[in-house]
Image 1 (tube, one colour):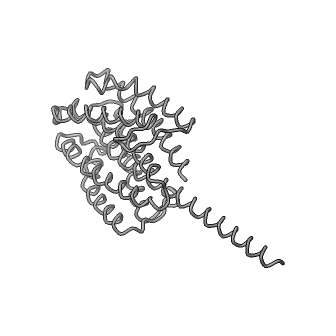
Image 2 (cartoon, helix red, strand yellow):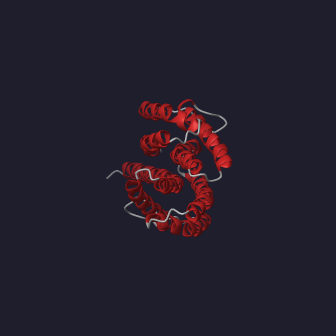
Image 3 (cartoon, one colour):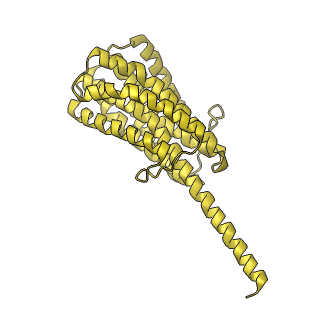
Length: 283
């Protein structure tokens, strides 16, 4: 065999394998940021579900949803730290991120019993106040973990790609956070504060959705060029146009709450599809 040809072929093979390895790592990191970001959403979704149970809105269905949300948060948190083949999560090796996940675990250990109390039928004021007090610190520390994953992705993902996956993922959380805030108001918990929080959440979701489509320098978002993702964001916009009037006006009438309970999950579902498309497109 011609030695020069052999060396050339070996070099090409090595470059191909290195490129394949890089691609797999990028896909893995996109998935990690996606699922870590989804954890933020789950902190709000379970809180929302507990509050829907307390208001007697589709109580049995929301108990079942709550049980599933609690189990998924628990499984994903363990998977982020130690790996999970079912979820496609590699083990987190970064010591700083592992330490941050330990903070999340400690806060989760404080909130989980309140969720279990709701599942057992206890929707007393003390349980709901515990959920109201502890869900945001859990969200904050989980968000910090996502930012750390985003920063660590610098070696495998372009910064703007990691940023887009992060903020698109955060939109999922905001769909649930605004619904939770509406239900906290409806349950008479810190009404003035939660009205202010709800106003901010609505504004941020609106701004980020526009930024994902058109770009936003303040948010560090590039314009989305992929036609399929743009079409998916159009579906999100259509649902948002139907849901926004309820949360923007903090309407807590029974009819509005039932409509909110009906609309927020399709909004979450379609936003989740968009996040998955961003993650899959990561290279």
